[in-house]
Length: 119
Length: 112
Image (tube, rainbow over all chains, first blue to last red; front, side, top):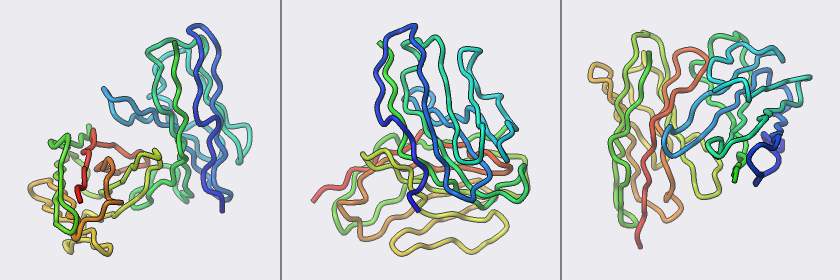
């Protein structure tokens, strides 16, 4: 298995531009998570999908951020318009959860992340 | 609310020596799991070890072991026989539902 695949690995964009980050979870995994990592705030959960349905989006910082999961093998995180404070590493992670609200002992499998720089 | 605190921003250890990374947490849940993740310069988040809260026995994975003190809400990671490849950021994480809550991390430097 190729693991969780994220693209691009690096993205540099100008303030005000639209940015789309992509994630392909591990085949058979029904749960997908988007995390953001910054020096100041560490790793924060942005949104959680189970069976392609958003279960918890309380971590999405503001309306400029949106995420979709049109099918079990693809998810996007979009920022429009982007701002310099959005600069961070964005991780996607997936796992199989028989109960959508109970992960407990399951460790996520993370992708390699996308480093976003907004100038 | 759940919190995870790693009070050591940086640690250093000599090759072949032993180092302990500290983590404390707070949760009102009775059933939860604790994890240590390693993040090398490649950015990949790698699961190192996990501990079930209701198990008193400390988890061990080869050179990695934990000291889980449930009453004190402490979950430290011990790395024995440190190797140069152990140099990385280490994150402690707590899960009592579906979301992992992470500490801010400890940067481990391994010197020859």
